[in-house]
Length: 141
Image 1 (tube, one colour):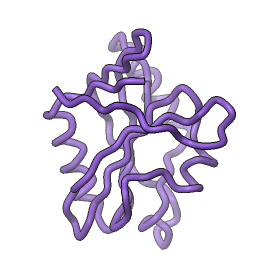
Image 2: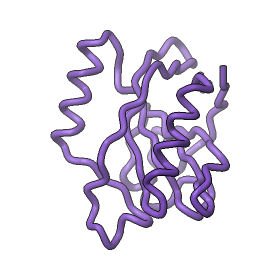
Image 3: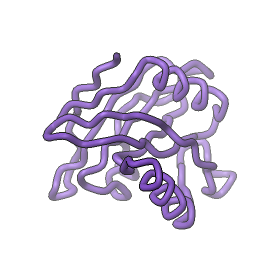
Protein backbone atom coordinates (compact mmCIF):
# COMPACT_ATOMS: atom_id res chain seq x y z
CA UNK A 1 0.00 0.00 0.00
CA UNK A 2 1.19 3.50 -0.87
CA UNK A 3 0.04 6.65 0.89
CA UNK A 4 0.34 10.07 -0.75
CA UNK A 5 0.41 13.13 1.50
CA UNK A 6 1.29 16.69 0.58
CA UNK A 7 4.12 18.38 2.44
CA UNK A 8 1.62 21.10 3.42
CA UNK A 9 -0.63 18.52 5.13
CA UNK A 10 2.39 16.94 6.79
CA UNK A 11 3.31 20.36 8.16
CA UNK A 12 -0.23 20.88 9.47
CA UNK A 13 -0.11 17.50 11.23
CA UNK A 14 3.30 18.36 12.72
CA UNK A 15 1.99 21.72 13.98
CA UNK A 16 -1.12 20.14 15.49
CA UNK A 17 0.81 17.36 17.20
CA UNK A 18 3.40 19.79 18.59
CA UNK A 19 0.54 21.94 19.95
CA UNK A 20 -1.02 18.97 21.80
CA UNK A 21 2.33 17.91 23.34
CA UNK A 22 2.91 16.48 25.95
CA UNK A 23 -0.41 14.76 25.27
CA UNK A 24 -1.45 12.73 22.28
CA UNK A 25 -3.39 14.50 19.57
CA UNK A 26 -5.03 13.22 16.44
CA UNK A 27 -7.76 13.31 13.87
CA UNK A 28 -9.08 11.88 10.63
CA UNK A 29 -7.55 11.58 7.18
CA UNK A 30 -9.89 12.39 4.28
CA UNK A 31 -9.13 11.20 0.81
CA UNK A 32 -9.55 8.65 -1.93
CA UNK A 33 -8.46 5.07 -2.49
CA UNK A 34 -7.52 3.91 -5.98
CA UNK A 35 -6.08 0.40 -6.10
CA UNK A 36 -3.14 0.29 -3.70
CA UNK A 37 -2.81 4.12 -3.54
CA UNK A 38 -4.42 6.14 -0.76
CA UNK A 39 -4.36 9.88 -1.48
CA UNK A 40 -4.87 12.11 1.54
CA UNK A 41 -6.58 15.38 0.53
CA UNK A 42 -7.35 16.88 3.94
CA UNK A 43 -7.03 16.31 7.67
CA UNK A 44 -9.44 17.18 10.44
CA UNK A 45 -8.17 17.41 13.99
CA UNK A 46 -10.42 15.91 16.65
CA UNK A 47 -10.24 16.69 20.37
CA UNK A 48 -8.73 13.99 22.60
CA UNK A 49 -11.52 12.87 24.95
CA UNK A 50 -9.53 10.23 26.80
CA UNK A 51 -9.30 10.74 30.56
CA UNK A 52 -7.05 13.78 31.14
CA UNK A 53 -4.57 11.87 33.30
CA UNK A 54 -4.04 9.33 30.49
CA UNK A 55 -3.80 11.70 27.50
CA UNK A 56 0.01 11.63 27.56
CA UNK A 57 -0.18 8.11 26.08
CA UNK A 58 -3.77 7.59 24.93
CA UNK A 59 -6.04 9.22 22.36
CA UNK A 60 -9.77 8.75 21.84
CA UNK A 61 -12.66 10.49 20.11
CA UNK A 62 -16.40 10.13 20.48
CA UNK A 63 -18.69 8.10 18.19
CA UNK A 64 -20.39 11.42 17.41
CA UNK A 65 -17.07 12.76 16.07
CA UNK A 66 -16.82 9.72 13.79
CA UNK A 67 -20.38 10.17 12.46
CA UNK A 68 -19.97 13.93 11.98
CA UNK A 69 -16.71 13.55 10.08
CA UNK A 70 -17.97 10.69 7.95
CA UNK A 71 -20.90 12.92 6.90
CA UNK A 72 -18.52 15.83 6.22
CA UNK A 73 -16.27 13.63 4.08
CA UNK A 74 -19.29 12.40 2.09
CA UNK A 75 -20.52 15.96 1.54
CA UNK A 76 -17.11 16.89 0.16
CA UNK A 77 -16.93 13.83 -2.13
CA UNK A 78 -14.24 12.05 -0.10
CA UNK A 79 -14.00 9.14 2.33
CA UNK A 80 -12.52 8.71 5.77
CA UNK A 81 -9.42 6.79 4.72
CA UNK A 82 -7.57 6.82 7.99
CA UNK A 83 -6.58 8.31 11.22
CA UNK A 84 -3.54 10.18 12.49
CA UNK A 85 -2.19 10.65 15.99
CA UNK A 86 0.97 11.44 17.89
CA UNK A 87 3.25 9.46 20.16
CA UNK A 88 4.76 11.97 22.61
CA UNK A 89 8.38 11.10 23.42
CA UNK A 90 7.94 7.71 21.74
CA UNK A 91 8.67 6.29 18.29
CA UNK A 92 6.19 6.53 15.41
CA UNK A 93 5.44 2.82 15.79
CA UNK A 94 1.99 1.44 16.66
CA UNK A 95 1.52 0.35 20.24
CA UNK A 96 -0.38 -2.71 21.38
CA UNK A 97 -3.20 -0.35 22.37
CA UNK A 98 -3.18 1.05 18.82
CA UNK A 99 -3.45 -2.47 17.38
CA UNK A 100 -6.31 -3.45 19.69
CA UNK A 101 -8.35 -0.39 18.68
CA UNK A 102 -7.47 -0.18 14.98
CA UNK A 103 -9.63 -1.05 11.99
CA UNK A 104 -8.48 -2.97 8.90
CA UNK A 105 -8.49 -1.01 5.62
CA UNK A 106 -7.69 2.25 7.41
CA UNK A 107 -4.38 4.09 7.05
CA UNK A 108 -2.78 5.05 10.36
CA UNK A 109 -0.26 7.87 10.34
CA UNK A 110 1.73 8.17 13.54
CA UNK A 111 3.95 11.15 14.33
CA UNK A 112 6.67 10.94 16.93
CA UNK A 113 6.92 14.17 18.92
CA UNK A 114 10.16 14.27 20.90
CA UNK A 115 10.57 17.09 23.43
CA UNK A 116 7.77 19.10 21.75
CA UNK A 117 9.19 18.71 18.20
CA UNK A 118 7.61 16.47 15.56
CA UNK A 119 10.52 14.51 14.20
CA UNK A 120 9.24 11.36 12.46
CA UNK A 121 6.08 10.34 10.62
CA UNK A 122 5.20 6.85 9.45
CA UNK A 123 2.17 5.22 7.83
CA UNK A 124 0.75 1.85 8.86
CA UNK A 125 -1.98 -0.60 7.86
CA UNK A 126 -3.54 -3.19 10.14
CA UNK A 127 -3.43 -6.70 8.75
CA UNK A 128 -6.85 -8.25 7.96
CA UNK A 129 -6.40 -10.75 10.82
CA UNK A 130 -5.77 -7.77 13.18
CA UNK A 131 -2.60 -9.46 14.43
CA UNK A 132 -0.11 -6.73 13.54
CA UNK A 133 0.52 -3.60 11.53
CA UNK A 134 2.52 -3.45 8.31
CA UNK A 135 4.36 -0.34 7.23
CA UNK A 136 2.98 1.53 4.23
CA UNK A 137 5.07 3.58 1.82
CA UNK A 138 4.48 7.23 2.70
CA UNK A 139 5.13 9.50 -0.29
CA UNK A 140 5.31 13.24 0.36
CA UNK A 141 4.49 15.50 -2.57
